Amino acid sequence: MQFYNPTAVVLQCGADSLAGDRLGVFNLSSRGHAACIEFVKSFNRPLIVLGGGGYSIRNVPRAWCSETAILVNHELSDGTLTPQ
Image (tube, rainbow, N blue to C red):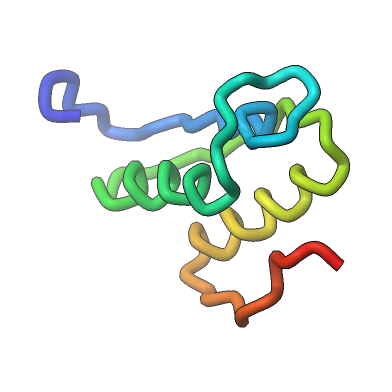
């Protein structure tokens, strides 16, 4: 961010990097994935966030729900993202 100093950021948040994904190998937790959004958001630049990827039907909606909450400054209650 310091070197390029962008005026805006486009962040593609493919859920195939989450643990348990059939194609991904990064094995990030949902919280780790969300931490990436928090980090980029902390630079206070205009941010466009795109979904994509993700081949585990349980991981994708949970991750995107959590990340959308972060983007709109909404705190989810405990258990919101816990599998049923």
